[in-house]
Image (cartoon, rainbow, N blue to C red):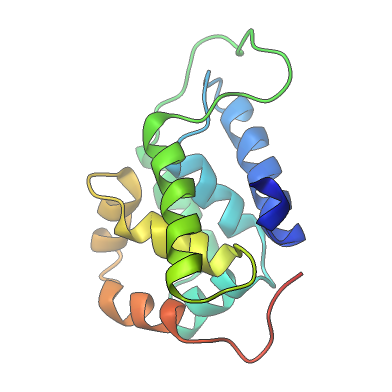
Amino acid sequence: MREAFTETLRKVIERAQHEARQLNQEFVGTEHLMLGVLHCDTCEAAQALRQCGLERESLRAVLLAEMPRGKEPPIVTGDLPLSPKAQRVINGAIVDAQALHEQSISTRVLLLSLIDEPQTILGDVLRKSAADVEALRERLIARPEMAEN
């Protein structure tokens, strides 16, 4: 199904792999996916965050402060596996893209799935930032003027 991902989303997922390894994690979780999104400053997800008054760097700092760090680097070579929640988020993004009649799965749809996933560090971070999650959700559902690659 990765062929349905935009090129930008593929890069975000690669970045999530990097973020997980930097934190000495054995898997890619929802928080790593969000860190990947926050690394991209021109993608649809980043634009939606900005339009809702959420600053990427401050979200990143709060998210990193809340995340656990492993003591040793992961021994896994190649891609780290997705956590069950991260896999659920990816699956949710696929379902959301279909429901929205999208041609491909973009960072915007991934972010929509991330904020809809219950009981994550990301949810706590958004609440702490006093984000209007419903306004963000509505913005993510709205069709963008220009789709990402």
